[in-house]
Length: 164
Ligand code: 5GP
Image (cartoon, rainbow, N blue to C red; front, side):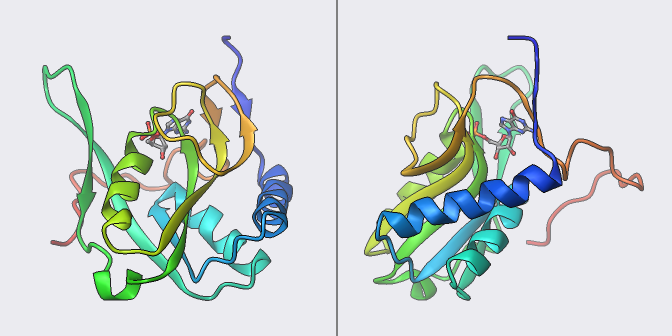
């Protein structure tokens, strides 16, 4: 549909508690939470408090859109999580939304080589997602306005790149 899914900070607060409750009710006890920057940082922080997990890590994944290319590929940007930090751990991957699911697929493939178990928690999942997340607060096929990105930045920063 044309209408958008609007998430306020207030509703996000409730969503994160319900998402955490679903993880707890399922009996999953993650050793660490792996957030996917930047949207996943909000989710991971909330889940960390609600699930009493202090071991939080971050992964930077960005969509690279090749000019004139038909394929969109997410790429991992440095710094990549230390595999020693991940080894033999039960991981909960936290993100804002699984849309195409390509981002989560990449993270899953990276993790599954190193960790004991990996599951994913997202606020939203769309029907076309390649990855079916274990924990989803809400399913939607609409474009989502998140409270942290619905407004433009307060300053303009052109050509900013992450440190290698
Ligand atoms: P993917 O397609 O790999 O599942 O999603 C990649 C990223 O695109 C998400 O983490 C999110 O940052 C962004 N994205 C995908 N769908 C939406 C949406 O409906 N609204 C917003 N604001 N961002 C989205």
